[in-house]
Image (tube, rainbow, N blue to C red; front, top):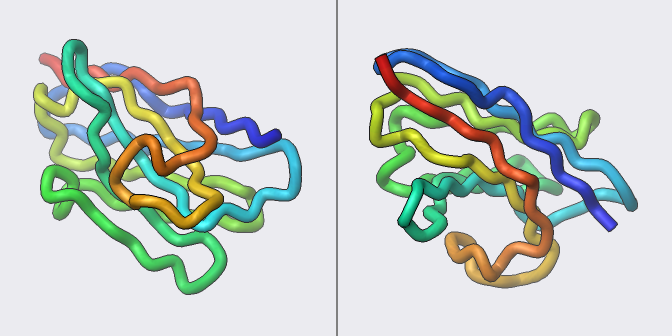
Length: 125
């Protein structure tokens, strides 16, 4: 079993930055892809970005994340990061990391096998 634990959420002013971390523990960790999603109240879970794990670390971004958000990884620490800059009130949501072990759709929540508990990010003055 794999456990994913997010950290780094909180309250930030518009225009500010936050870095989320997602640490994996449990059995030998070797996913195909790690990703970040977010979910605002009353909305569906939204794909933001993903990174492959076992190679050069190819990255993929949704339009809403491109240019402001950056995904990175530290394989030695089994940790993936999400750097968020120029935050806006509409970025307020619960942010989830997810691990995909099988071949499945990259940007669809059902394609992922493990999820973290979520980290609240609130952007407000």
